Length: 243
Image (cartoon, rainbow, N blue to C red; front, side, top):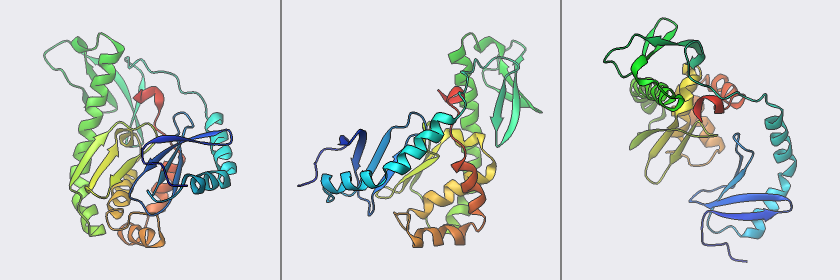
């Protein structure tokens, strides 16, 4: 059977529904969304649907365990972004506070308080937008500081770095265009996690798959990568904060 040409498309494997994306990759990669448990499979163009079904079927126990862990996570309440609420930054905790009315239209940090401009916070959406804009500035500044060192360590250079709101991933890389995307939610994790994600995605510019060669590149560039990897494996973007 020839593989389907369109992408993405949905493939049924027993009771599982899998979104298949045909990409220029060497290996099959199955992911479970931490947001809703949805399955996504990246596959080379020449692999048939029959082979994809067999692969997913062989991973059914892994999918079940992953979804059970997701279901066991405590429900995160929706945030109102009001004064007194806690918000994370680089693994630490800040608290939102109101700033006296004035011309300022952006957030400002003072100690462990993140001050919101009082005249621009009429709705939850506007308060969330202000916090996200501040987070983006913090993350972009940190990327600009750490990226040159990461590129030297990996011996690879990205054509473009973008900050995106991602539901279930910390970063991604398009090898063909050398474009790297960093998840905005990474700003909530310890700083070492950003260093690791930069190293990880840059390493894909030299080796597209998660092969032994890929991990050897990561190891040489960042010997302590396993600590950050463990943190991110046990974490997920907080839906109450980001959505």
